[in-house]
Image 1: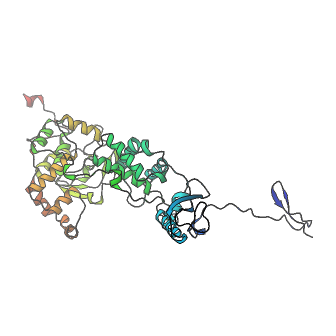
Image 2 (image 1 turned 90 degrees about the vertical axis):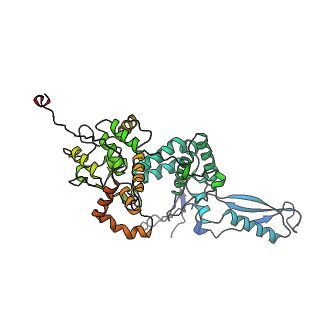
Length: 434
């Protein structure tokens, strides 16, 4: 005869005398956490203090319902004032409207309030760590570097320790006011605010839905308006480019002339190797870029392109690359590309009042003055195609004769003053010098 189970050391054990039967196992029920599938929604209940029955149409009515609290496994009762209601039915209707308006029964509210407590700082680290390896549109190191600076300098010191669920319009408003007081430009404030939005949106559930969906109110947060016509876009004039090349050191002058004559980005120019130039140095193949001394893919797929070089510049390049085997613009040992910071110092030492992108704008203006077709300008500069017509005319990029004709018609747009740069100038014999 089987004996009833007894508790030993807090566990249930079987007290059977039969040797053939093992100890009976009893499953311990675990406390279940909040689950939306077990909920059917709630309508709450209404009441009046001191007037439970009958209903008093002049007394204030109240409504009660349960809400999820972040960090708590059990819901808390919440009371709201409904005002004077003529009947109990009207009070119930007003409570249902309040619950619907507050999203108490919504899935998004449930996920936001029952998810594990996470600070903005923790989510920002997860977000930025996954940017370079994500399958869709991995972010370039230079962009990640800028976003990392925004986080460390401005965002994390201000809202880094806030729970992620509390980072909404009020937090963004405080963030914008801090950046504005720090003297940041409207464009920088807008860019850094986008980082805040991306971090909040990166928190998703197992189905890929945002845990904290936000409707950002730019009027409330005081988001500045960026006026493109007032954005500083420094460029060089023809006289300035000529002066920069003439006053630059011999190891940097070819690079400055190359940037002004082709419109390449600085990272694309520093990544160039001898095989990237045609034998006559009339065509340049852009296939890579350099950032902090490391090779990477160009900025966009459109940046992978061929750039035609005017003959005046090509003749100097043939002289410059005569003994080049690796990078065209390399360090003294020839094994590494020039550091962008060092090149920028050399540029400013040559009386330049702007950065590398001013060369790119100068080349764009030179092409526009010569009335070069817009699709060819976009192709040479590595800009993406914007219209269906651009896609239809994409085959023109393979017409080398047409491209070469326009390239020679435009020319350089600046003077080289007859300068030549030989990488290894031949020594002059004393007899010849005499």
